[in-house]
Picture 1 (cartoon, one colour):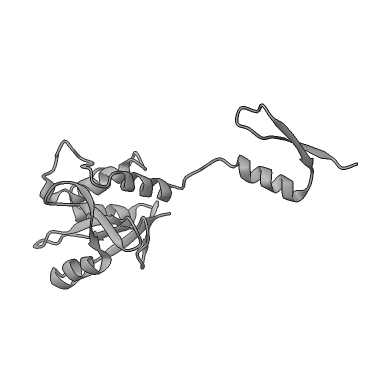
Picture 2: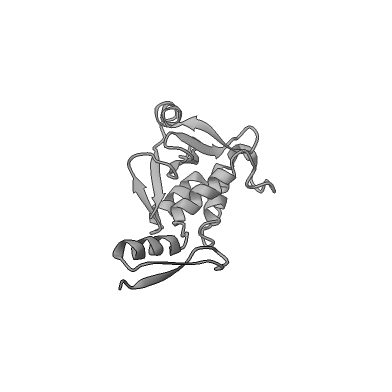
Amino acid sequence: MAKLLQVFTTPKIKEVEYVEVTKENIDKLKEQLKPNIETMQEKFIKICLDALDTDPTPQDEIKDDVSCAFTLSTLIKKVFNDFPVLSSTKDLDMKLFMDKRFQRITKPKLGAIITSPRTNTTLGHCGMFCTSERIANNNSKNGLWQATYSYDDWIKKYKNKLGLKIYLYEIK
């Protein structure tokens, strides 16, 4: 006689099903019971996507036309509550580079953070990839978090036209 495994089949545990104890049935049960755990990267993506077409910093602590780092670091802080809210792309890039929770990457992908840090003479910009090609960022014209750039457009403007460096990061 085969051993039977008792499986509860509804969330309220009103129904009980008995199935044969096999590795396959145990593996199925383990998969069903796995908690729905988000990685920090997944949480960051969700937060940034939920913020699209909104102003994540409605108090306007920093003027909308220069608040990209402030906005992005505010969104990062929703994932890591000890992350500082920064007003400079240069400071944000340095923090991402030094923080062990982030790593530089070489290719864009969904959820990657992009920075073009300011120099002494040129304002920088930053955002995050809301798809593998589109970049969500603070729209300086209206203060909304919007997908206003493609990666190619970013390279043309910030690297080729303004001479800024481009760095990409992901959450480890």
